[in-house]
Picture 1 (spheres, helix red, strand yellow):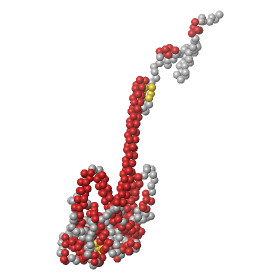
Picture 2 (cartoon, one colour):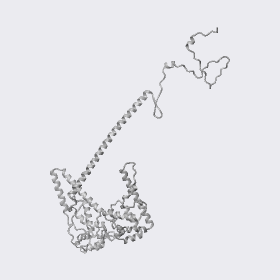
Picture 3 (cartoon, rainbow, N blue to C red):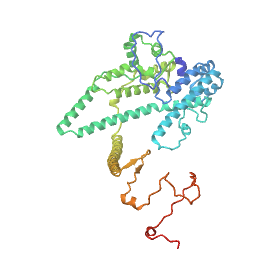
Picture 4 (cartoon, rainbow, N blue to C red):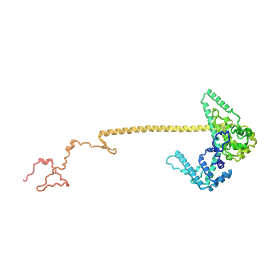
Length: 468
């Protein structure tokens, strides 16, 4: 995407200027073949989606013409978004696909977040959660419409307007934490070591302040210094218009945040050196941000986060351009009050107490798990002992194990006395009693043999009856 198209579309989004600027080394004018630098990451969670939409829209001739003629009010009011209805079909198709991919990405992020915090088997309507994202229309999750472009611009504008304020607040907390840790460390020392540490701290502060004069950002002295040391030109030949064109690195006709911050590199090097113990590089980035905001406040007339050539030239005609006064660095500015530090320490104490409580809960849970593990081991040993006893009992009783693991006990052998008490069963195939005279004895296998009459033992002792 061309530099001008990118800037026009993001007049309020300022997509090029929220990342940290990279110091530039340029002793000679840039070559025409040198590609423009890549835009810095905005830090927005939908940064990639925003860039891809811009790239696709730039390919449409009609939209590109309308974008070049649009002003900040047209973009801010959403008037430019209406032109989306006139872009070509293949552009709309690509935008539709980009939106579906973004919806899918957000849906997966929401699902992962909610599933990690919710209990199992809890139904979550992940699609309804998409309403919390302001950069797309949740009512239409399949096609990219004019409403989507309007929401995207509005969301990015609002988010980036608060970006600098968030960075300042983060830096304040960083400074308070650093001071809190220093004071806590002093409390842990004895009197002699505490005095030595305090003396070392004051020495580092004094050494940090021993630096050359800091020029006010955007002043004649500051720009001439860049003109001479960075551009390698004669300071007596300083020309604001030439200076502007030299530092409009992407040739889009404006100075964006990144290009402005690059102008302050020489000033920052006077104060901060990563090799020095007394210099804090986090403070250097805060200093860079403050310098850029100062220039924007005094030069950027329409507050679109871009400095045009006209705005730049007018700023060089102001009285304070030649008589800027002094510039106070971060260490010379009161970042926080003692009351703010006290509240911050109370927050830290509350957070520490909550963490300790959670640690104690986890410790108890760990002990409970260990106790449960011991009980399970004891139950396992009891079960193992019961199995061994069962095996011993089986072997003693002559028990056998069935195919399914069940116990089968064999019947004991009958006692000899019991055999005498029982009548002897007739054996199969033995001779049968003879029938009456004259009848032929026939054997019918299918018929049951008649049982022999039982004769009491007393009848055998009596004499037979006589016919007489």
